[in-house]
Length: 82
Image: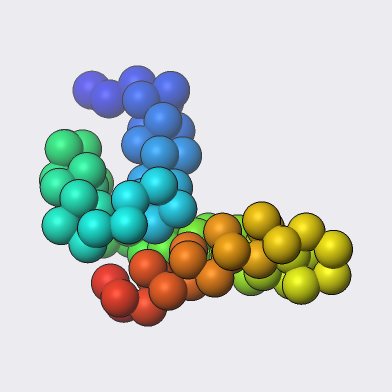
């Protein structure tokens, strides 16, 4: 049986794939390293990545150019995989 902490770690780490890896193959490989990841978990992770991307882009356009770059890259990566 999988522990709750293990499942939380999988969900936590999955959502950052689109923020951390610029190469689509690296993102796929990173997700493949997790066993027993459901499609629903991946879809939730994509939703979180979109949320973070939008927030970073929005705050970045106001007064933090680094956030804007991170948000733009995250949303671009999600669109590549979506």
